[in-house]
Image (cartoon, rainbow, N blue to C red; front, side, top):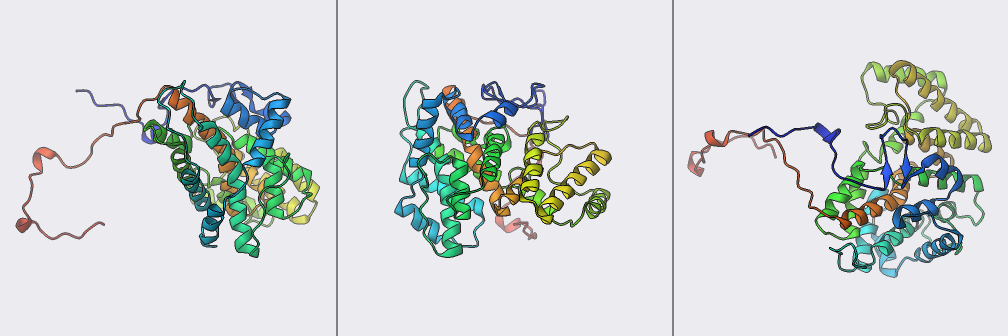
Length: 393
């Protein structure tokens, strides 16, 4: 019997077919055929979420109705508020997102999971509800523990996800439109990325015929790790260590000499640069000029020097997380919230893949290459003949 092929980390392994996104195909990053540059320049996140979930860009009427629907879904029930209030102030914000997803699965469960792609159920509604509620749930928890105020999470009926988030975060009815648009663009860029780790995890859960909420909860747990979603938080913490571009260069050279991982650079798939990075870099530069404080300008200058050093020394490009971390900081988003904002965006992609997987489902069940003791040389040892060994548990 031939030995099965093996790729550590599933590098290069084709795990399925999808018509949602192109990544690393030599055609750039596209959502259902539309280039991400065009979407980031001309669309809103709501248009992109609609595209991913419903398969086409909405017309004006569809978009207006979708925005109003998402706005109506921002209501937090009393039981949900009670849960958020009971969660400790010291909780990691990603745990708030995971708990919110699980709670929604109990409060508003999905209809019977469809085993036939033609069977109607409310999977789309579940996706829309999660997209709409994640930001309000996070900020209700945050404001309650920060100020003791039980905020109203529904802002204007025509407010976008980005507008609602910035309004609730900053406690203002008139947020800076540049901040709102910067957050909006970031949501577009984070919305979908093919079989990234969290999406694949959601697909595995979906393949068991589990519900939307379980699949999204699985994805959130996967995204929590610093090698995936947490990379934007780690990137900002690195950038913010340095006070000047020269200090950043010396610090970065030291990290490289010590063979440390530099977060915000490189990508498993993109070898010639992340197509999202130039878009978010321009927003980081724009905000640093608009805010016009020494810290804002210096933060961008430090990041720019780090990019130059990594290109010179390692020929490594920045990825989306690097400059997105600066955009989020300049929008006054707490560092621990960077990955939860990622969740709000990527839920549109996750649920799109959940729906797609259900259309031609097959249970995910890979195999491993066994490297343990030889069963033919490992006889069972009775209790009275076992030697005491130090437990590894």
